[in-house]
Image (cartoon, rainbow, N blue to C red; front, top):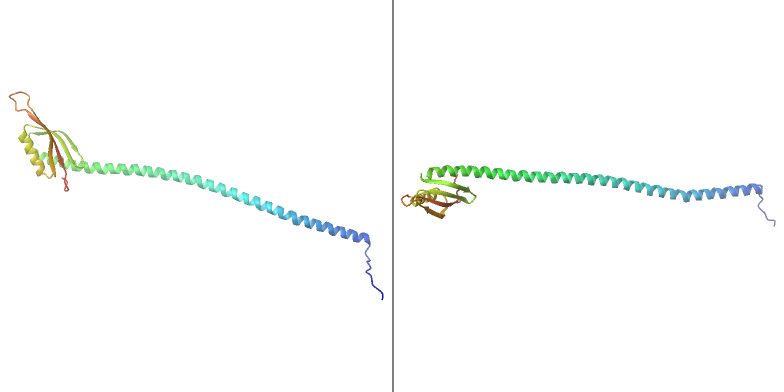
Amino acid sequence: GAMFSDISLVPKSMMAKAESQTKKRTLVLLAILVILPIIMLTYFKYSNISKLEDNKAKLTTDIQNAQSIKEIITEYNSVNNRLMFRQEILNSSLSSTDSFTAILSLMETIMPEDVFYLNVVNTEEGLSMNCVAKDKLTVAEFIVALKDAGFVDVFVPSLTDTTITAGDAGFVTFNVVCLYGGDTID
């Protein structure tokens, strides 16, 4: 038997050139396959860094806006608290003034003619008055009138009988405290 052998009709120089081009193409493709992922990784990394920096800038702006909102809320609360405090003072002064006026009107009707106020202090608990009267009997009449007016407790913590000269009747200075009860005097 005869054997067949491959016969190449392409010249060796062309084959070498084709083989060289194939190697070059393979090297270029390999370089592209290696360089392209590196470029893509770098691009995505830079893109992520850029996105993160944009997010950071946005968050910083949001935080600054939130700080200004916090300051506005704090200022609003401060102003609101001052307003509520002033309103409470106004309400209490109006109610105190109204009730105090009513009490003074009542006192004018029940007070004996010979009793005079030196000082009157109105509190939530009651009244404290420094008064002058012509004698102790007038003081007693005044205390009875106050008890009849609706005060829960009326007491005299101090009383001073003063005589200017031996023949004069003198006068009595006293302090009287009147406590309000459940039914305040209006």
